[in-house]
Structure formats: structure tokens, C-alpha cells
Image (cartoon, rainbow, N blue to C red; front, top):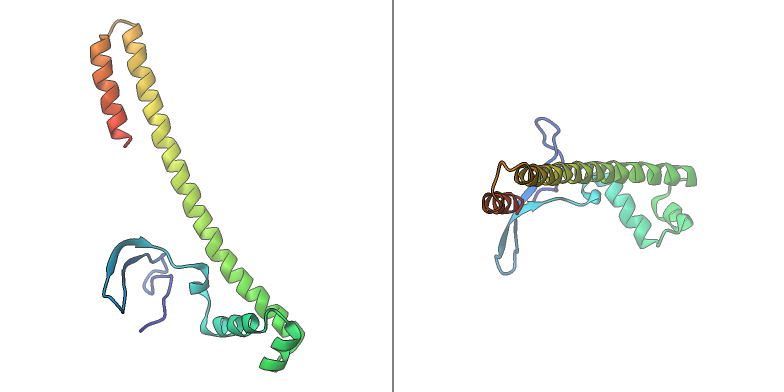
Length: 142
């Protein structure tokens, strides 16, 4: 089984997992799934993280297990934090873009409703026609 990776090897774009399968019961799930921030860690960073966690964050214990100095441990922790923050920052950016797109769609629907109501007020639409148009606007937002 290959290690999960988060970037396209051809262009560097974000990869989205589209299928998961249980090795026990063979259940298959399809959709769009994102890997967690730890998937972006290199094998070396993941091995260090395992040691760090098994030592419960005790840097003296990590020093003893790996035979590396305290400054090296701090540098490695900084590398790992930077890798995780890059992934979290990209996820936050995606969510902000999604929220903005949703707001734009929502504003467009409000503007359309206001236009319909203004046409009724101006006598350009009957109330029955307006209700029909408003229902279409509501249906488009679902």
C-alpha cells in the first residue's frame, strides 16, 4: 500500500481522495475526502513525531532515544509545525473561498427577490406572477 500524499506529482495541485474501502467488510465509500495535516509530513518527520509522542513530549527522553541534541529537536519540531500550518492555512483558504462563493450566491438571490418585489410595486408584475418567480428563486437556492 502506498503512502498517502496530498499533492499531484505532475502539477503540484491539491489531491482529493474520492474512494475509501474497508479491508475487513469491503464497504466502499465514494465522495470527496481530504487528508489530514499529518499526511503532508515526510517519513522522517512522521518517525520523529511518533518518537516525540511516545516520549509524551519529554525532550530529554527524545534526546536519549534519538541521540540528537536539544537544538536539533527544536528545529525538527519547528519544521513539523511549519508543515502542518501550511496545510491548515490552505484548508482555511479553501473554506474562506467557499464561504465567499456562498455569500455571493446568497446576495444574488436577495437582489433577485428585491427586483421581483420592486416590479410588483411598480405594477410591472402581478402578485401571482411574483409568487411564481419567487418560488423559482427559492428553488434555485436549494
